[in-house]
Length: 533
Image (cartoon, rainbow, N blue to C red; front, side):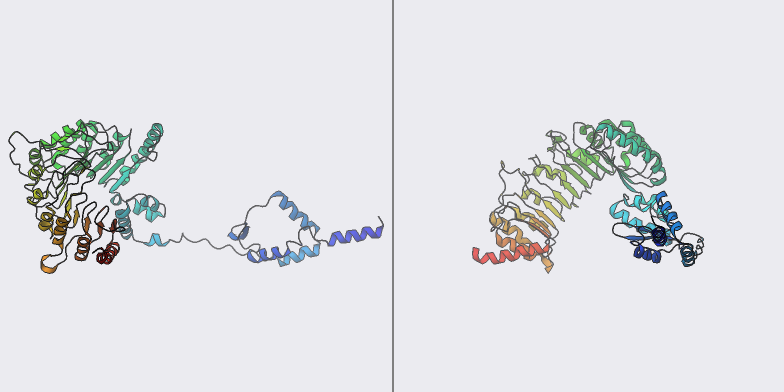
C-alpha cells in the first residue's frame, strides 16, 4: 500500500466513532436526561415500559466492560477531556432518616382497631381475615392477635376427602400449629367446630381442655375416633360448656352418656343423629340428667333410618321440663305411652318451636299432638309437614293462641291417604292476627273451603293489615279470585308459591319472591279475571 493511502486510512480510523454509537446517539441522550451519571438512579428497560429505579444499577457483564474500555482508548485525548468536563458532578447522598415513616395503619389507636376488627369478625368470622390482617404491620398484628377476637373458630384439615394417608398427615400438620396457636389466641374461645377430623380428634380436644376454659359450644361434624374419656375430660376442663352438636359423627353412646352425666345440670342444647345407639342417650335424658335442657334435635343422617323412634311423651316432659325447641326431623316417631292408661304429663310450658317434619308418612295423630302440646301456650312455630293424620279440627283445640308459623305441607305422602277437604278456615280464623307464614301445599281442601279460609286475612279487626308475609299453596285448588284477594289484603307479602295449582291460568303457576314479583302476579290475575269469567 502506498504511504499516502496508509496515512488516509489511519486518519479515517482515528476519526471514526465506535460501532453502534451512531444508532445509540438519540437513545443515549434520553437516558442521560432521565438518569444522569452520579444521580443515584439507573434505568431498567422492558418490553413495554421504562423504569427509573433508585440504586447503582445492575452490574455490567465482562463483554460490556471491555467494549467500554475499547471505546475510551479509540477516543482522542481532546475528546476524553471534553467528556470529563461535560460529566456532571456527583450529587451528595441524602442523609438517612431517623426512622421509618409510620403509615395510617400505625396511627390508628389499638382500641379503635379492635372495634373495627370485631365488626368484621362478627360478620365473616375470624378466618381468613385476621390471618391476613396480621401481615400488614406491627400494630395490625398486635390487634389481630388479641384473644377477644378469636371466640368462634372452625377447624378443618385442608386435605379432607382425599386419601387416608394424606388426610392423617394434614391433621398432624394442623395439630402442630394448634399447639402454639391455642395458648396464645384461643384463651377466650367460646364456640368451636371440628369438621372432617378422622384420627386426631382426641389430641385436639385435649388442647382445647387445656387452653380454652371458656368454651360454651362444641360441634363435631363428620368426626371419628371420639373416645368416652375425651368428652368427660372436656366437660371437667370447661365448666361453661352447655351445648353439644354431634350430628353426622361416629361417637359412641357411652361417651355421650358419660358426658351428659358429668355436664348434665348445665346442658342447654343437644343435637343428635338417630341411630341404634341413640336409645341409650335418650334414656339418659328421660331419666332427668339434663333438667335445664332447652333445645333438643334428633334427625336422620344422609342414609335415612327406617327404624321407628319410640319416645314416651310424658317421660320426656318430666325429664326436660324447660324444653323450648323440640325437633324430630325425618323420623318415624312412635309416641309410646307410659302404660296402658295414659296419664297426662306436665307438658312443656316454655315450648316455642315444635318440628315433626318428615318426607314419609308418620304416626303423629291429633291425640299424640294434644298430649305433646296440651301445656304449651307460648308456641310460635309448628312444623307438621308430612303429618297427614293431623286434621284442622285437632289443631283448633291446641292451647297456643299466638302462632306465627304453621307448616302443613305434604310432599309425596298424600298419594295413598284420604285428605280432608274441609276445615282450613278453622286454622286461619284462629291465628289470623299473628300468623306470618302459612304452608298448605299438597292439601286436598276444596276451592270453596280455601276461599273461605284465605278470606279471613281480608277482614282484620282495627283496620291494621295482616302480618302474613309467606304463603305456600303449591298443588292446591285455590281459585284466581282468592289469590288476588290475598295479595291485595296483605301488603307485606314477600313469598307466594302457586306451582301446580290446577285452577290458575297458564303462565302464573310458579313461585313469586319479593314484592315486585307478587305485585306482577296480581296485575296478571286482574287482567285475566274478566276473560275467564
